[in-house]
Length: 168
Image (cartoon, rainbow, N blue to C red):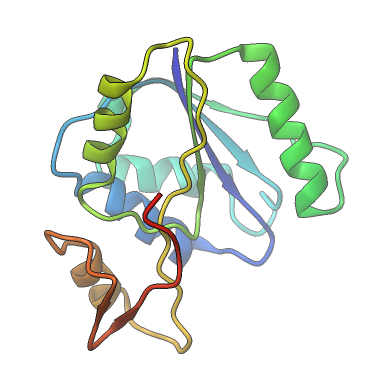
């Protein structure tokens, strides 16, 4: 079973979720998950209906057999919320898990990369895949973010990118 946990926290708003869902809509391959679990720590400020409306806006429902809203935990910190999601994941016992924070805009080839990992590993294999993230040191507009995410190739260094990470 493949599941996606979409989680959003108090410092993140509709703008972040919009970019995340837009980037999911622009994948270079089709992809499928059995369930998307939405975990929202601040539904009084960013309603779950707003998140569901964004999913509809970007026509994402066909990628998920079902979408469920998880209840808010008693956690007061991001760490406690992540423990809650980890516990939930243990109960569900999926074979593949994507943890997607609402401030993650993913490249158009992200799902292709996940498919390559799936093809190279068995369901009993365990691995951790850390999604590459782009962090802006200043405010940039959505169209600039989306242009960056639509690049064909990962480029560790150019006039707008400085990558500090690993190739492993």
